[in-house]
Amino acid sequence: MTKNNFKRGLPEDLPGEYEVHGVYHCPAMSDAKVLTLIHDMSADDAGHVVRVYMSREENDEFIFDFELEAFAFPSYESAVAFANRLPSLTALELLMVQNGYDFESMTGNPPILQ
Image 1 (cartoon, helix red, strand yellow):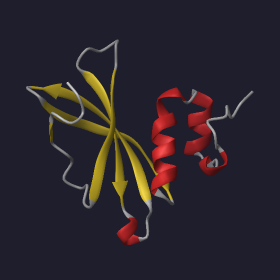
Image 2: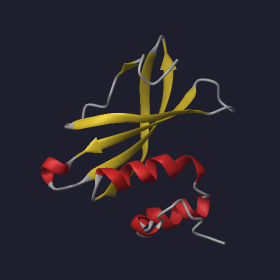
Image 3: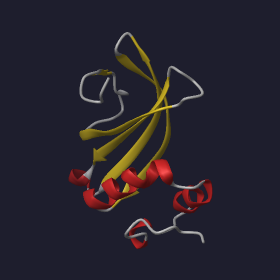
Image 4: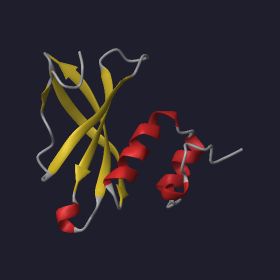
């Protein structure tokens, strides 16, 4: 199943435009999935937000269990760059981003920690 052919039951408090960026399967838990959305909040001068949800699939429909995290970015391009890199971030890199590390300085997919 691809991200384009499933029903989406988005949380009620998610106004505005969004796009499904990725669906990641958790091999250790067969029905668990991580869904990333890019939420366009530029109309409210809030930029773009990468939202990460823990979800599961039942009868070709995604059930949103809870939001894991939301990451705000000033531009669509920076949100997409982060969302693309999210699955390969180390735990330390993720902690740094969660605590205000400037993702914009992470150009060209360099490792943060060496």
